[in-house]
Image (cartoon, rainbow, N blue to C red; front, side, top):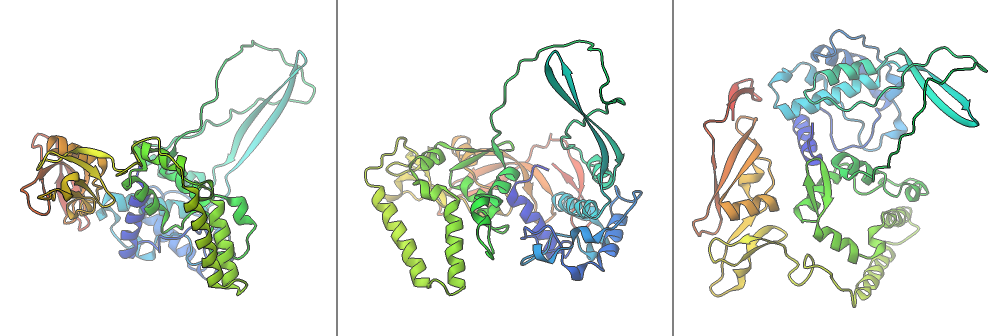
Length: 437
């Protein structure tokens, strides 16, 4: 659906608060034994509520998803029994998409095995050995449910090309070559990170180092509750930028990586700290000794920064990126931690112009006041934005955000709509239809 990690978490949180999905901040993919008895009825009621599942067989192999040892604080995310009784078509599109995804995964997870016959052949020709593989599906199993769900999506996920079936062959059989050709190619460089691949990398970071530790609660970088926030903070701080689905390092981020000590760039450090915290928990290490180790490391790192030079302006002096020109005094507007502000803030008289990143106008519409948006507002006084959220109607819409600066403490914004933009009906959370710009 092209949602960011934070948007996905927000949609799940909204479903949880409506009692349509279970607690979202978990990385477990299993359920506990006490949930096994209620699983068949949950699956049957959800299948009846999902249009793509109504005519498919519904086996419920609960044992495949039950494992107490793989559930820590919270079990896997599930739709609730309440969801099966709710008019899901009345949900905002983002929440409905995520709930359908959760429900479809549940029905797939308890389904029958997907089975196939695979043939591997080794052939010898002119002293060289060649190989070929073929696959013939014998039972669709759980993939029938997955394919039915994918068929309902406007944007179909990419499917890997299936291996073609091979003809019947016998050992020692001689074949006639129809032809031969040589193809020249090149390997592709590794792909940039996307939201989902970065989340996976954070979860499994330094897996070998964590595998050596026993009885630790956290593994990898962050937790299911914090990883989405970490990515958003990197974007807000200007270290990473989004380009379509990709996450790319900025000049500021690249320069920070260059000057940062190797110890801080390694996920191994997190594993080491988890090991020491485990020792504190077991009484093998005192909290004071743990903190003393942290202090000693920081002291060493700070001393090691003597003589470090910064190659670009991204982290130098003010360390601030220029966004545009102040509409009040003409000085530069730069990016800070919490705002885009005028460099004349300490002038006489001071200039108080600032665009706050947590401005209620944008957060209420579930949008970020990013560097790109701020630059457009400073240059043109307005910026076109898509996917703005209506708190009143629970729908998304497109509009032009206009900056109105009257010299007051806070800059004001208003919305303008293009009356020529085609409109379409959309149902809100209360089942009422609205025209969507």
